[in-house]
Length: 163
Image (cartoon, rainbow, N blue to C red; front, side):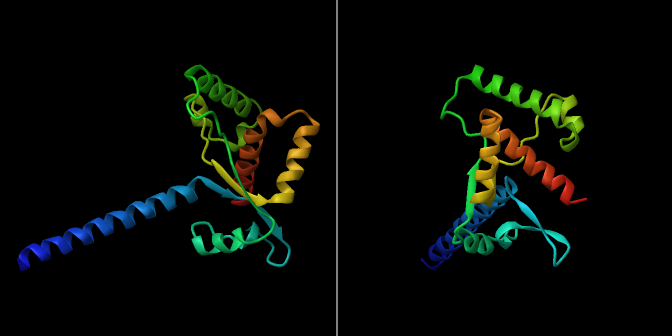
């Protein structure tokens, strides 16, 4: 009987460990696909994430979510089950636009292989900044490609602030 209880406890610990590992991988994936916009801090002479979010740190994210200006936007949403032609056309359209106008901020080798590197599917930025970008895009009839533009801004900012 004691042996059976010991095996049961080991099994519970194993399941708990698996659950924790799965949760950690989900959080890691969430952070890897999320870009937090940056601003230039004159005091430190460096770029900092808005809302003092530390990428990978859930506590700093929780504090940021309580701020009035916090805004999280999901990129590239599509119908729940889009028709295959729509998905292929959409991906080709995004690929052509980004490779034609923004090749500097994307990996050239990926373009040679006809693969678009969409690494961010979520962005975090101040709500007022998001509204300014949307007004600009609306002014120039670019709202249909808003997600692509936001992704390009995020990739460009990442590329140029890490140099």
